[in-house]
Length: 123
Image (cartoon, rainbow, N blue to C red; front, side, top):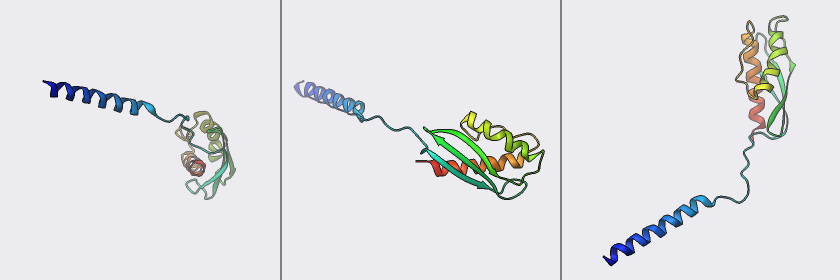
């Protein structure tokens, strides 16, 4: 009977030590930021024409600006994606946004270029 009580006490102490170790953690807050501040460029050849280039600005782990700095997309079609998609990406904080109707290839090129820029910005 004595051995059973001793075993129970040891198990309880072990449980308390393990529980305390699991709750300990670091005293400094963990950094959850994904991106470094700065401006990054990405290019894509997925559009109607080759060489679409974007500039993506990151501030405080947020996408603050997306600008298409170079493109040769069709005026009136691909140019709609160039004008509209960057703002949607900033608003959504992601390239997971709807493509611009009628400008699927231009939209894909912008998204790819932004994703490549974001890869450079990762910590």
